[in-house]
Length: 334
Image (cartoon, rainbow, N blue to C red; front, side, top):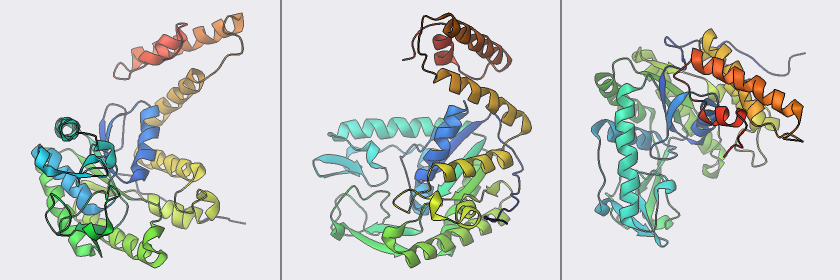
């Protein structure tokens, strides 16, 4: 008997390797994948504006990086005894406006330089519902979209659902602009399998439908764009609440791991997959907690993996094993 529906996943024109630079932007699911890429020694920059859920905020952030747009203190607002930006996640909030501006502009500069050199841009869209700012919101253009509500009063916002045509137009212009800045950049679109049930079950499905329609239209039009079906893998392949956390909203570890395995199989070269296995073995050894650090067995263990790391570093000099080399040389990890 079959207990889940599996389907083939088309491979992208340009598969991922460790020599490439990856820029990830979008919802919290982006960060789940980013964490796994980081553990496997990929070169990546993740969410320079913090977590972003809606297409407008994602597109605005990418325009910000391309144009190297710097923020000023008058672009911020004060709420709940802290300063915030309507275009950034709360991780860019701070006690003083000056502190915020420094963090925001440093992140923008880094993203601007990184985007010009990036090989892959992974965009994960979470919801087509947007919260636009009302005339009551401080330091905001009424009707503009907030990337994060920063626990501000509800009267500062008005909610609406984007239409597929709006999302298509938004990213159609952006993809053209990205190609002019970085002609070799491949854009990998995904739709987050996280369910936005605070909007309501029906409203969540309407939102995902808008994103699906828009993204597939963009992929059909732009040869540098590719769609990876993270949403379908959780909703249609696994299709079971056993693969969700207790909140019944976020995919659990097993679901995320399943999507990760499908992602690597489809989007990475065979050589990359083999190298990832070697790195994973070193990661496990690096996390090993010895019963007796002074034992002969532990010294042999350290020596074995010190040699493995040295050989791997020599073969792949673009990877960084500084912490691991320090540990296997006999020092305690930081």
